[in-house]
Length: 206
Image (tube, rainbow, N blue to C red; front, side, top):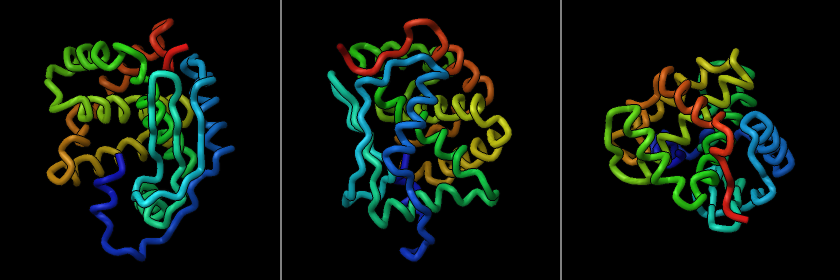
C-alpha cells in the first residue's frame, strides 16, 4: 500500500500527522469485526519503530496475524501524505480504509483462501493479476473501500478518489500495487457481498 507514497514525497520535510496508537487500532479492528462478523482473537496489534516507510505492516501466519503500527518519522510522513486529500476532518475515514486494507492481509492467511478469492475476483473483473501481491493489494483496497462505504458513507467519495489517484499516479513505479483498474463502484459492491457471505472470513487457524 505505502511504497508508492514514499517514492512520491517531494522532500523529507512533509508535515507529520500522528499515527494511531494500539488502543485506537484495536477499536478499529473490533468495529470491522462487528461489521463483517469475524473472530479477532488471533489478531494482535503492536506499536513499533521500524526502518521502513510503511505506517502499517501486517505479518500474517498460520496461527496469528500481527498488525504493526510503525511510529518512525518516515512512516508518519507517508501517513501525512496519504491524508492530504484537500478535505479536512477525514482522518477517521482514512483510518477505517486502512484497517480494512490491512486486515485483508490477515484474512488471506487462511489456508486456501488466497487462491479461492483470487480466482473469484479475476473471474468477476475479467482480468489476470500479475502476482499474488497484485491480487492481494487490489482486494485489500476494495475491502477497505467497502468498509468505508458502511461506516463513513459521507466520506466515501473523498477516500475513493484519493486511493484511486495514488494507485494511478504511482502505477509505473509500483505496478504490483496498482489496483486502479479494479477500483470501481460495482467491484466494491461485489467484494462487500462476498465479505457478507456466512463463514466466508476467518483469520488464521485454530
